[in-house]
Figure 1 (cartoon, helix red, strand yellow):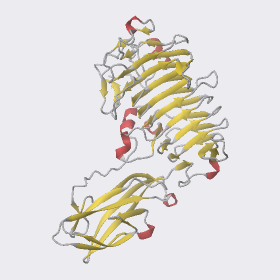
Figure 2: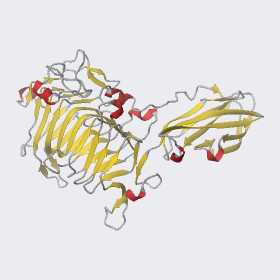
Figure 3: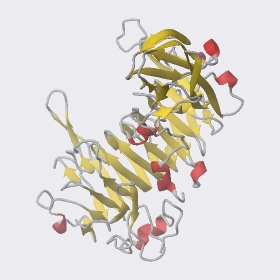
Figure 4: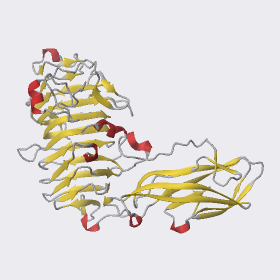
Length: 497
């Protein structure tokens, strides 16, 4: 997965308009009007879904009032663009008075017809025309479009209706909750992006296989939900163009690092044999939620993957069985990883680094627990059979980044072997805890660049060459495919000199 960090910073090739509204530039065909931009550019837009609204300002800096006889789209009603001129919508708006030394706003959006697309990626163009006093000026409109597969439970958006299903949660005969149902084993490939509006459920013991290079986009509050006896298999590849990406469907530059844009991947109780590898999951609410185990196999095998910039949690596991190798879990608003109400867990060569900046974080990065309080206030115990962390880094900008929250009435088995951990020793005296084996406490791991979300190790990092060789033999290559030699580094990255 060489160069995987660059995907976090620049996931798609997106053309961005950077002109400021207050910068006045002349339009084409010189005239009395000036404009805040000469091209109104829309970032990548999914077909049939539309886009965010863009706007420009039109200035009359002359000493006389101007009657705009017509402001219109060059392609008229056939244009994929729509405009609103000073509060009036239409393909053409007539007789707009723009007084001297005044300005007006024009808002525009675009809706792209996939039937017009010859390729997966294409461009739509038009012009806003301004006619007045025998003068014509124009502003270019440009939108980059992508044709996509749509999976929707929302009637306003394209979907395959035969896959829609619904549930009657209230038992009143009204099937109010609708979802897109995958009830036979299905493959998603990288031929086109996959856009989810509403929830996608995997049911009936089916498997959803998501192949290398697939891009998954979820709308606000949308989720992927795997039900009992069903399976999610996300099998990406090591090269950048083979990585699977899961993120929100707003592709404008502003949204590239905004958390909370979609819901979660939810592996419900009884889902089985889920596997995620070479995948980047970012900008959602919960990266992955895993509920109680459905058989003797792990609920989830998670390898060589990144979960980044979640408004809630990176991983929420509840009485589950999870194994993880070469994971980078970063910048979450609550916990990076919460192993709640017991379960069985094993993590090797993982970096849990939490420097969430959207708001103040009150919770530690890593949380372990073996009980919960039910609705009647009674304590219910759930055994933590195993929680092993080997050659891992647990760090962040809080004073304490590891919380062991246990009830003595149930097993609470954990082990930290050759780890770098930031922990408040007044809360837990780990130096006297036999289950902290050769751990380095409260030493800054010296990541390369926190501002750029680069969590590789700098040359001065204390995490270099102090890992367990036994663990490295089980995970001989790092997340970028670099071989771990003798004296391995901690975390998911092996420093290459």
